[in-house]
Image (cartoon, rainbow, N blue to C red; front, side):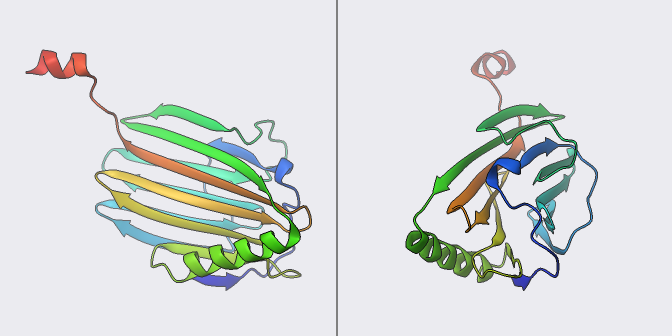
Length: 178
């Protein structure tokens, strides 16, 4: 799903993005509710980037990547945490592209996400390449989502990927159980 976000472009630099786990829902400009094999997932586009809310029988999880006033947690390159009965893994990277490459990559990502049944993308007013896009999937008991945050004025594209799933059994625990 592709939408034009009716707001000013507030997260104007990749360096301003922060990451938070467990925040309450923030006001959203656009949402997409998904049911992925027992997991309820809500993709949320914020005026300042994105939030994902996940709920299933093991509990709840929320991820926020946005310009969060007063936050001192910058966007990490990677995080691995246990959240209740889940394992949570997050990774982020910043791509720096030339103006021509940026425009092509932006069009490619917007086409991919807007045509996908589990995709949500929002374009900010003022530039067709200023956008936030999200894509989710469920595979083998794991929930995955990817996001892209575009900063055309700097030629920067922030890409994140997240995996949330049941804790893996270790070989020692498996041996003791059999």
